[in-house]
Length: 362
Image 1 (cartoon, rainbow, N blue to C red):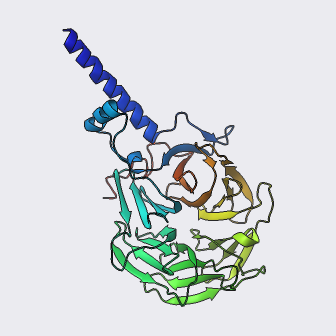
Image 2 (cartoon, one colour):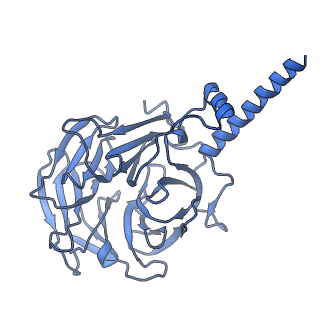
Image 3 (cartoon, rainbow, N blue to C red):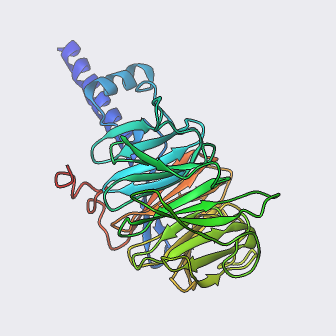
């Protein structure tokens, strides 16, 4: 009888331990709201490794109880860019030389672009996903853009060493007819451009800008995004501003200046747009991301610079994206993570990441 009781207690302990482990992996310890007085976003989760989407099995629970670990996780090495589509989160990793895919509702984790062949990646940085689910990535070292389908199968590549010097950012138009690539250039070159391509054929359509401070020119531009109306927004990092263009590359407006106040920039990197056309800019010096309307008026900011890891704490934020449901994903290179924020109007189990559409998308 005593032996049976001990056995039941052990099973109960393992079950509780497994439950705690699952919560620790997937959920924040408390519901963190931003801003705290009138929430617009809630911190939802952090992605760092394959364990963050892994389904905890009885074997995993037993291993955790016996060894204190569930085995070896495949973790992010040096993440930079991020894109999301129907519950799948794609992260470029310059150490792994790959795109890391977290399929949260499908509980799948894999690397894309590591196989020998025409789709092999060398230094992927910028990334975007089109309405079709196709993945577009800027390969900085190979000096080209590469396109995969949603499962990571190579489709095509465009651009060349003659055309690109340091491709760092990429975005596709809402109708997926055009691709916009940021060529960051370098300190000793004037080739700081926004390149426009036919997204389907790869034909180079137009080169926008050169190195300079004038409207429509760039100084070490880094990332690019498109809004639902087809506008194109660029982080013009060395000029401490964001510039906006129409779909043909004609200048529309600019906002931002160098400084330490809210609404200004110190080291702007990643940029994204939400379904309403608001603009999100990650700043590596501030350790946060700021949200603006389409005209550049500051709405709010989230995050703090910190040497201690935790929700909304960043040392080197880089890429940022917003999915179909308004969830925000931001990469931190130093802490090797992706933080996810849910808009306050969306319930935890709603949207693609919440699993609401999991059966429909398959």
